[in-house]
Image (cartoon, rainbow, N blue to C red; front, side, top):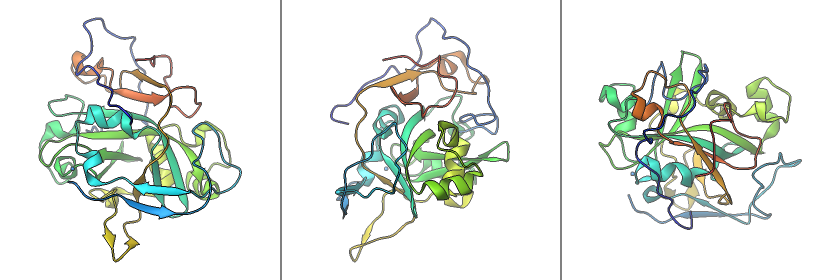
Length: 268
């Protein structure tokens, strides 16, 4: 982002309106829950996508930058709003991130609270890797690991808007629609990308090997949203009050590509 927005680390003493539980929730009952290199650019031909519309044709980009490792190696609460507007790319599918949630160290809603296990080890890796887990054994949840190695923090990608590969997205989702229901929910995002838990610990920055891009799942630069919304995270009623009420959910304003509940989101 052009300038870093700072957000309170915990919620104010005045509790927020209760949030509803959903089987497509964040670091929930299945529960959840970083180095400097040159950016890579991929040249192509057409303008950046708009955040709140479904393109009628597959766009290309005048200049697409793969975000470098250092972009991710900051506090999850700083990384989360910076991810809004960025692009996730796998194969012909490109999604624009419209909603995220931050999960931090010593956060009673973060998978990192369990310590390093076979499943949570990626959360403690260097920022810039994926942490993928199954919610209720059904929903594949994509998280972007934040901060430095050993910290234990990540940002859950809650919703996206389609940019390209709409037919592939619809096929993977089993829904022939262009409505926001296609991608408004973290399990839907994972399904649209066609990823599984095998992608956990995959680097989202792609190293430049002899000038070629490798990796298969990447985070690309995208337009910064003009306005954002903040609110409490979803589906973490089990967390301590100061964490359940913390305003660590971030969304692009003025777009339909946001998951429910929407009435708990407000301008910062």
